[in-house]
Length: 274
Image 1 (tube, rainbow, N blue to C red):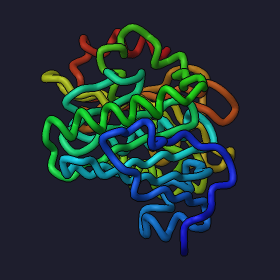
Image 2: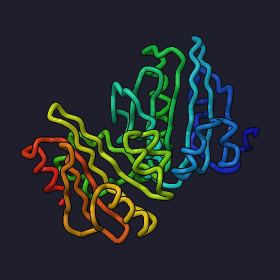
Image 3: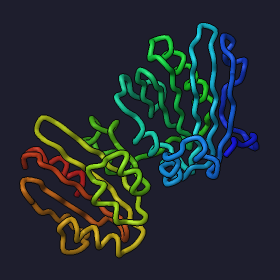
Image 4: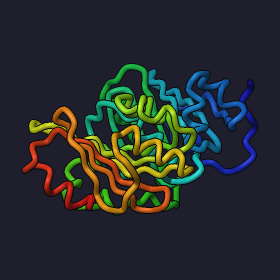
């Protein structure tokens, strides 16, 4: 499907922004045409809540080629969610904005409803700097508030690991961002989840806050995790050296974690959750 004409304002690069380069592509895509650009990957963006995409390609005089992708999502959580499952091997984090990731071939950021990605061909330092400058220009055009994390993940004990926090808005997000849990969540139609996977020399802890769309799904999750019922008190079980704990926090919401930490290392986390 061909790209769309521009019908509303989206952040973007103008010719005056790149005096040493030339904009060679400037296309727009909506939910129907997105498959024409990322066939096989569009479903993930649509699951999060995709609105519009702007693609720009810039050729610089010294031969560098940069592709800029600007995704507008339905809300800041959706933009952060895509960012959280797309970032990989960040050499620098949060240096461009509150949520950013710089790697050799790609610079990514989330701000307000927007997820921004700049991709280069060779991973040179000069290309990385060009990507950073383009993303910085885009971020400067976005006048929206960033996502506020749930109170659980603002607790002090989680702060050293907060850059690993992920947000999912369905099973495709889990499959892409934390496949170890995909079997647990493939059975549910609609849910959202914040997940903070923590790994230390002492072991792991996966702490999550989950919102289901029905009582049936919530009950099914409890039963499949090995619990008898939903309860507003913290319930825990220990199976094969892995402690699982769950607490109902609202009619369709719960906090769930699992860990193989020694019991002494868990107390701070349990206190934050309980």
